[in-house]
Length: 385
Image (cartoon, rainbow, N blue to C red):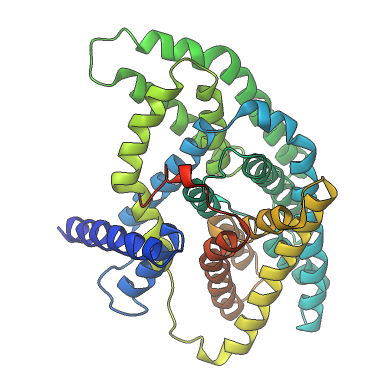
């Protein structure tokens, strides 16, 4: 019964907070993130972290990225390949180099400092996707560049992490790690080209309710599972599934129904649960370190990705908007931090600091994007969902 009460509180509070955020001329997602902090252990304690709530949140982010894939303009995506590579790689090199230098200044060993740089290089655009949607830029050249850069970022950082872990003595076969990722992307393309349309055509005539939408969700979850299984983030798999379905005649039917399901329950839980993870206990003595690392995390990704975007031909305003969208480290960096703690590359105190830094980068991303991206009037398709 506790879960039911928590869901009711989350849905009510996230919708009201999102509406208030829009009235204050900020993306709705910012209000949803902040209300999570207020509802969670850090302030009111009405919502506590549970495994079930975490699973619902995971479904929320998977569906959010699935929708982003469904709404991707594949023609623009192909044209943005060069720009995505520039943004993705520049957005890794700058945080990695400066993060390593900061780690050395903090007295870390070379390997631990490299790990810190890698963690700061990670990107999770799940929050940025919603902000882009609300601002009307998800289907723009900037939007597709950001999504492509996120895929590149994820693959490069995870492979680099595997290399670092193997040096740290972890039982990791780097060659196998790379091979599994190559097989995933090759398989995702082949399945998306030949099998996904066939599955949807076979489901369409079935005499059951919402057969096509169910087929779309089956494809989404299988892609996400296989991505996670091969060491690629589940959100990248979900995004790939969305892109595959966007190339079929069932795109609009799946998109409309999945948006209804997602924004009614799962996505609000995801946004709010990020804020719920914030706990202020025991970190008061680390405020200086948190502030310093947060500034480094924000500026290195913002500047690095913006330089890459500028080199790809964007004007400075668009380049800074792209850089801002890449700032959020989200769940990808939290997973990397947990791996590092388990391998002894970060201690418990530094882990707590990094969690707060990751959450800060996530919370500042929507208002930064709002600053650089002009809102398109037609764009309230994401609205206050």
